[in-house]
Length: 470
Image (cartoon, rainbow, N blue to C red):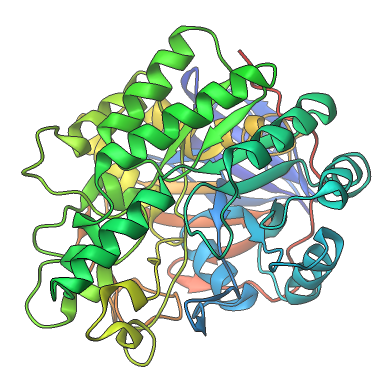
């Protein structure tokens, strides 16, 4: 027995159209004029007045990651359950290479962490912290044989996962031959460490100083440097992660205008939150909001939030991901009491990306089509998953979200909150819309505010190369 999603409005990057969607097994098999889809022998889901969109794809998550003297609070089971509740049917997690460890061993560890635990489909980006000849060879092998076609590097965190300009150039040159996508954490970590040491020496230890010591200019400078290196390496595909600053957006916009294969990602926290009311909360409450890059001040000379929304509208920013890196406040964020530099960096958000970006649609910041494009279709294209993922079309996986624009969602602990965290940075936020049904490869995971998924439903996805080049 298949499933017919009847009378809904299918949203794609190119428009919206009333269609019935027929699912058989794990695939979408046909689209019909409303009312003409076959009903006999099929389960019928009535989507009248609702939007039918592809399952969300979050290409930047950190699950079961050791970081900051602890381990993030979501493992692959709890994190992908939260993802399913949020209409995310595919995650691309960051597989870590510990300093001095081989790339292959790092990837094997992540396969072991995820196997049999995931509620939704998953893949990995390989983070590389020790760039040597063996790591460069591993990039070729993973691209050709393992379906790992994206590699993340850090211009921040000297002494941990930092790579210098020469190492980054060598990695980009390798990617120019194997076709891999280079993901870059672009902040000037050398300069940031100087500012952090100076702030602590002055006794400035509160969480708000995390933002003050990571100024937007240092995000812009590092973004510029990464773009120049990618050009020197042969216009290699470069993806700047978690952009928070207008200065960084300027650099990406100029590069794209000049025809470079440069793509920008931002996250809901940078579109919805500012330093004020978060990092500057009294006592130690601000620690809940520490992430890198930091939340920006609304009093900066640039309106970062407005510029980021504009960047999404104009395709200067290509993707919204979450950088989901959750910690509990108790016993985890509290590790940084008295020293903001020791607060574990990261926020949770894997469940709320579709919701928070849809609120931008309600506010007139984006169109419905652009909502789907930035959260579903472009991630699939950039990360070698299209058209298997990211589109409602015959032959594609039946990863489908039915969205009800006539209901509301209140985010918060005890409300809608399924991540393994003891707080939410979006506590009390009300969304003018609600997830009605979530399907992953034809299997219903969420329906009528009930969860029907199971660990192990999610499959590992071997990905192809980026097919969204300039």
